[in-house]
Image (cartoon, rainbow, N blue to C red; front, side, top):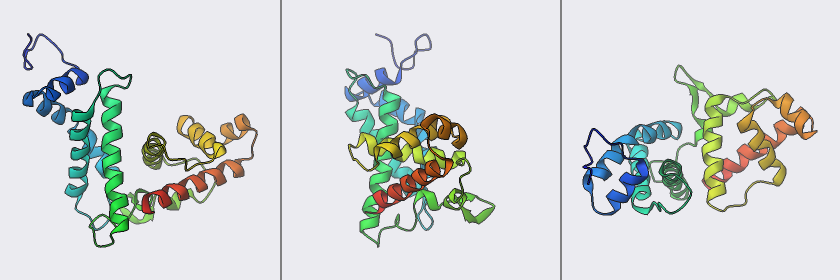
Length: 206
């Protein structure tokens, strides 16, 4: 049997997850190292003013550990896809839990109220969304992450049209092209996106 540190073989994430579930601590540690940067990036996306960034990272690592232990190699989803869902779910669950308990550390902000750029703390991501111009790439990452989580969580939050617009924006991010494709005005596309954002914020805080 090939050892985990064998240089002549490459173990997939799925292989490592199965090995970790069988009690191989080395396999678990290797997966944790592989996805540490993924957790860090997601934690940056969801960092909230007044919270210790390490707290958010810790929630992400808990989600990763859950992914390792709950992954089912017999299903179609890859470990990477499953891990991303679990990491996001854990962080968002912490945000929602904190929103219900105003004394918790993670209750002071949500992703859309993050400063858009470190050098300009007064300009938030949400501030860039008041016109019908295309979405900011940084915000799209957040929207995609949360929307994917909501859909996989089985929650019916968005209307069919809102989901259609969101899907098109995530694929193309060109309001004019989306307007022509859907046969709707640019203003209608923008209005749908504004509703999506409001619903996402309400979802996180209710």
